[in-house]
Image (cartoon, rainbow, N blue to C red; front, side):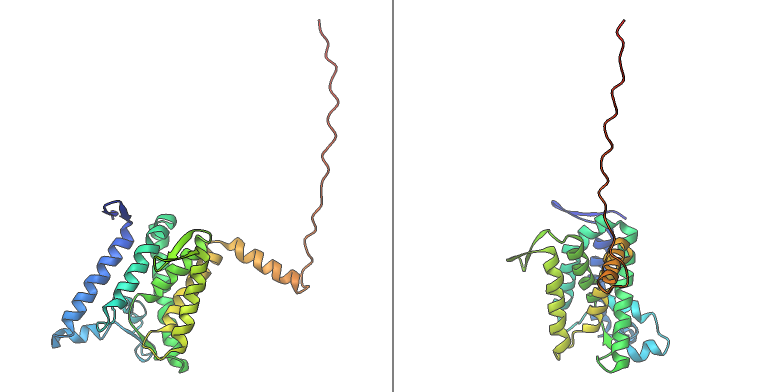
Length: 241
């Protein structure tokens, strides 16, 4: 796979391919729902609690290929997040790790949707790559904590602030009555945080765990000692012939 160059902007191969696939799927699904013979194929892709629990586990991944046909901005927003944040992370992580991140955020997001529907705290259905897009925002913010970024191209903030903005918008989604799947968003965000702070950087988890144990008194605080420098060696006598 090759990167795509648009003027001075280079889009890594997976990000470029993903954006192309999402646009193509949006167009094809829009055509398919208008053809009775193809509409049934589209119905097999969204994630729903009832269908996944009935054994149709592929829906945990395929739902990300579809977007709300009544709202093109659903696709546009996710595409912009993938374009802005996915490019840098793919270049930093490598193609294999980026693909793993994509798969995990989507699948875990789908599992969260199914769990929310089973628990009766969500609609139990979703379409769109929002789990991946939200995961990218969190992962980028945690990776580039001090990098300057402008929210909506206007409000200056640091990368870590993007994480808090993502959490704030998730809370609004969770308490609203919109069709937006807050469960899928949460699944992607949690997965991103675990990967970036934990599995890919295990030292962060170890340090946080050790600090918590020390504060709870379950572990003695590490004592630091100053080791004095050894005295300088006595110069040897030198003989001049």
